[in-house]
Image 1: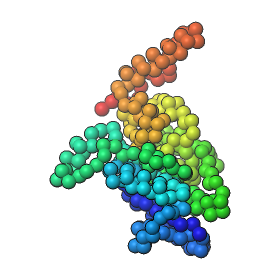
Image 2: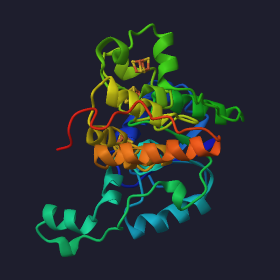
Image 3: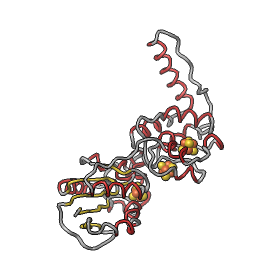
Length: 293
Ligand code: SF4
Ligand code: SF4
Ligand code: SF4
């Protein structure tokens, strides 16, 4: 019998709802799972140790930091579920600003608020065994994780891009057909290409795929979708803004267009020198795309 605990940190509860949404499937395996701690589903609180702890949400307070350490000590396996727990979530946008400014604008009595300066993923504080991406997570991947663990198999999830799933579904590419910005080429699959299937661009909620070529996509968005540098920066700065590759790309475009041109030119010249040849100007033209606000 697998003793399961589900923990909430700073989050919207959407990923826990995905687990509750699995009730039909979980009923089939009730003899194999014991829900020991899951406050969203039951008031019963069984003490640890637990075989599997699912953690939703990011760490934004010192209490959560201590709780993460205690969960790790009491759990055989720890799995983080959703963009908040795996990458800091949308609330990690505070990491790019001064949290005290927000607090004084949002709360009438800011002195009652105690919070850390940054929203950080659980893996920043404790070792994590597996992570499920997405905002929210995919129900299919969650069931796959639980059933693999029940039969003693290592769960494995594909790391290809959303584009691969999108093509398999036979979708018409929204970028090619309508120049709609889409992060599908650099985002990890798992959602069955949900947004492009409904003719929307991907917002990258599953986070970066392995070795994403974000700079090439950003160039395309600038030239073909005519996004301004600021818009490109914002596109990479959402659910997974602190994931290394997305953060780097968002910072690269969070400057004036002329600065991007100068930066690219310097890199190209350096590359040319190293190869013993002339630096090749990039396709990005000075002032291309919309103007900065
Ligand atoms: S990842 Fe998204 S759905 Fe899940 S808890 Fe965070 S905000 Fe909610
Ligand atoms: S619509 Fe987006 S995800 Fe689908 S193929 Fe085009 S770029 Fe890739
Ligand atoms: S298409 Fe992109 S934004 Fe939409 S659910 Fe999938 S990963 Fe998330």
